[in-house]
Amino acid sequence: MPRLKVDQDIRPMSEFRSGIATFVKQVHETKRPLVITQHGRGVAVLLDVAEYEAMQERIELLEEMQTAMAQIDAGAGVDHDVAKATVLGCIGE
Image (cartoon, rainbow, N blue to C red; front, side, top):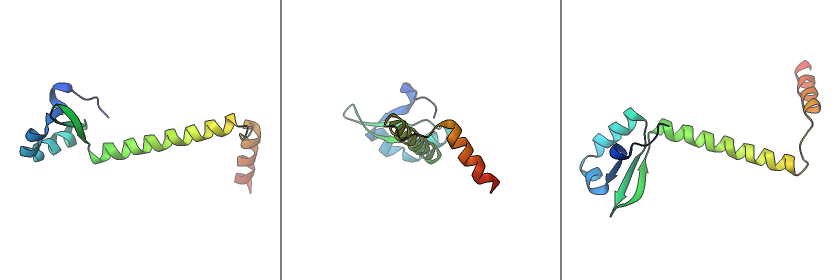
């Protein structure tokens, strides 16, 4: 996801309300998130659907990696050579 441009991608709620279609188009075209503020504080983020889905996939992958690392640290891992032989043995069947 492209980095946020502070001068373009942070808008007050009042401005967002009056120009929703424009901001949705901006998010879709730039693939950058839009931060919506209320009383000077961030209250919401508008994301392009494809960018949101990609972000969710990255989060899931990182969670799976964290789980695997915890399993290895707990001694529940399988030696590389054993895993390789097991996989290759299944392919040959």
